[in-house]
Image (cartoon, rainbow, N blue to C red):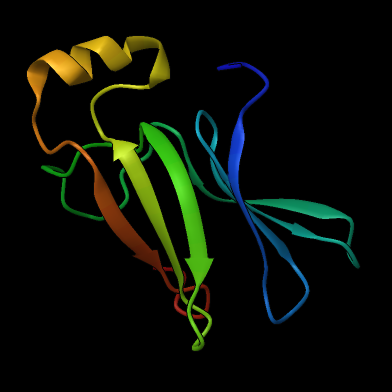
Length: 106
């Protein structure tokens, strides 16, 4: 799954793109009219310019806000599902919510 992906969140945007939160590969948009797959944020990439922020590890789900921003969740910024037992043993708040603004590309 870590090679081919595991989409866990799917939503259609107001502009007709399919937005995908893939657990292993990151956040993507599929533009049907242009027949393009657009990588918004890939696994292992930093979600912000803050170098202290952990890179994307394991996305879970997403939703699209009325203003077009995409809010998405990450189950753990430290472990993926192959190491879920480590997350259970550590028992720390490793998850987070992130927001992407497609107009500003931030």
